[in-house]
Image 1 (cartoon, rainbow, N blue to C red):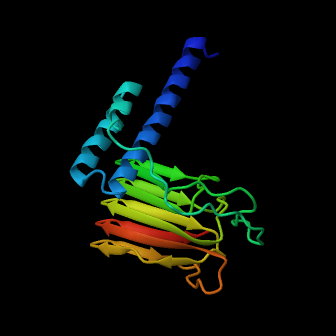
Image 2 (tube, rainbow, N blue to C red):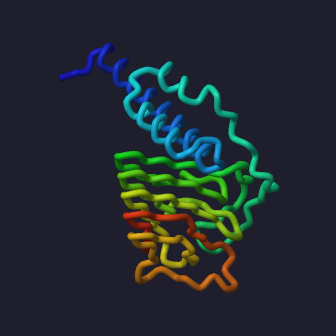
Image 3 (cartoon, rainbow, N blue to C red):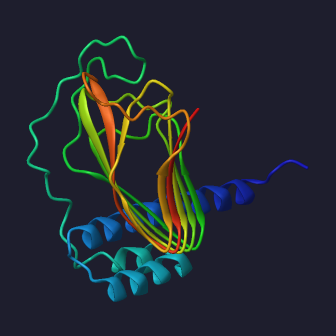
Length: 206
């Protein structure tokens, strides 16, 4: 059955709402990671964001929050490199990328990362950060993961080294077999930090 203009308009409206919801969750996560929101307020707003059914409801959740602050890092130029994951031209965006997942599943794939810092928050859900198609800058790429009763999975190409420094309490933080953990002389590598409570942070090579 062919879709009517009304059907297409409804689909477009839903996609726009979901896109705005993602941006609001990223803003909330960024505020939480920089102590702009405490845990209780973050959870309250995140719950309202997941239940919101209009742009106005979502926008009201971040009206009092400042715009993303610059990271203070100088823009890094991309250098020509042999591995496919190294950047070749355009500069990095300033600031960190925030990824939030609350009682749901979220998967970041493709060339989704254009900075050297990721803050991710997972509450009773599952977050996947797939770096296999991401062009990374030379030097360290930092991923700080906070996981509460959920799981965060980081997927890397086999030749991308990883340094695991996350802390687990009644949970697990581990780099699986096949993940290179030697960063000596590496042109780029991933540093995984953060905290997991009753959940897991794991790095896999594929």
